[in-house]
Amino acid sequence: MHTPFSGRQFALLTRHGKETILAPLLSAKLGASLVLTQDFDTDQLGTFSGEVERQLTPKDCALKKAQLACELTGLTLGLGSEGSFGPGPYGFGTVNHELVACVNLQEGWSVVGRHYNFSSVRKLTSRSTSALYEFMAKSPSNQGLLLQSTAGIAKGLHGIDAIKACLNDWFGKESLLVSELPEALTISDDLRAHQCPERRETIYRAMENLIARLLSPCPDCQTPGFWPDQIHSGLPCRSCGCPTNSTKARTAHCSHCNAERTYPVIETEADPGQCPICNP
Ligand SMILES: [Zn+2]
Ligand SMILES: [Zn+2]
Image (cartoon, rainbow, N blue to C red; front, side, top):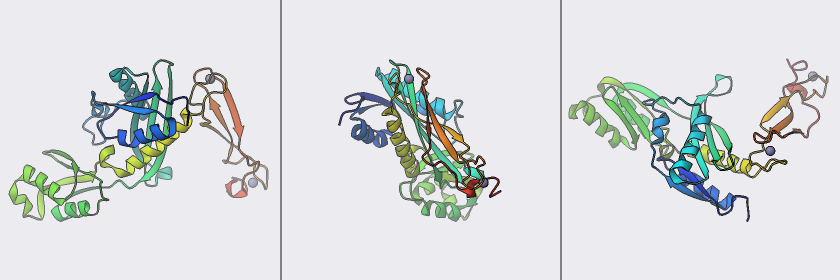
């Protein structure tokens, strides 16, 4: 297999084990390798648990990490990954959105791969020790937990003994014998990548998307990342001919030379079920 990235090295900055997700894909699909650096604590750019508020947008944050990875390693190509959680479509459920950015400092381009998934993140605030233990007992395997009290925050907890150790630290031995704690604690999923199998799966998909984009060059200048992100709705209804919300075409735009291509979808008519007139 030969790709434009065969034999190249990509720098990655992480202290959350993301190299184990990204390196196998780099090798299998691009013939490239990964160089890990841990010389900067990315938690300084923001944490899920809120001790450090993220100032940048998720996209700018992923790009910043990719650029830092290049600067710290002296490599030209860098990767950066950033995740966020927000309400799902129509306010239903929670969605985890993952981005994996690639920058090429020498050629001055960047490409961002993305994927989102419904998330099952959980959170509970309670004074009841049995409720906290039950929350832990119902955790998916390998999912770390986070426990917060006014005394502090403990991360990456696995197993009920890990909760007991925190209670002992914060409230003393007696707290292990009572059913009601002196204050309510918040227990939730630890969302850092090495503690969260669900996020790792979504990061994997975002990396697959990044690789597909990297292997899609601009037809005019060959810069990677020529991808039809811009969606045009208005596919005509099969029954009445009115424009619907269904996708009619997609446009790719090159940020380097401004080339543009529009690709109509294969279908020429939309299902009347999608039509605001026939199915209001
Ligand atoms: Zn119609
Ligand atoms: Zn171009």
